[in-house]
Amino acid sequence: MNSSSINRILVAEDHYVSRHLLERNLQNWGFEVISAQDGAAAAEILEGPEAPSIAILDWMMPRMDGVEVCQRIRKNHKNPYIYLLMLTAKSQKDEIATGLDAGADDYVIKPFDPDELRARLKVGQRVVELERTLEKRVKDLEAALADVKRLKTLLPICMYCKSVRDDQDYWRQIDEYIYTETGTDFSHGICPACMEKIAKGQLM
Image (tube, rainbow, N blue to C red; front, top):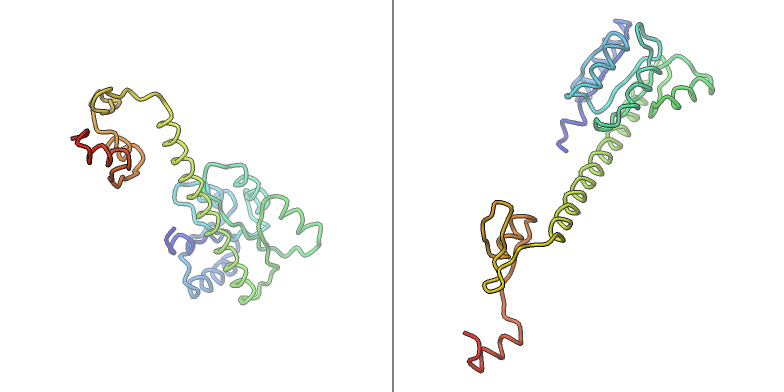
């Protein structure tokens, strides 16, 4: 995953002054900022093909609040993981628990402290990077298992030259076939039994 993908961030805040302050801070920290003025617009962006990796969601927004946005995003398991940070004036433990239960990863109390927000966003970047790395490794493992499964199937092989017939009905050397199917390369040598036969002139 390139570094730019974890530097794209959504700010969903309906209050213009607060949104502008957030945007300015984030840009100064090197983030590429995408803005939304209400929860419905934020959800649409986060469900899109170019969704940012991190989102700061105000709790109280028109059309859809931050809790509803979190719940909607967490129901979608097809897209890559998005780190959701709730920005709220609510400070009661039960209220904070409601936000976390809805799918938020973290929260910051308004008015936010820039140093605290920046530190929490760095945590978010690390989480996203780990999630993307894990996702790639799972896909690589699934591809490797598919290759193994394909090689376990019955292969039509010539009883004389040991060539293998592929799915396009072409005959190829077995090492070429396996390399094409799995990317596994071969180093050629001579086994002891064949070496003995060559020495005796029995294998040419």
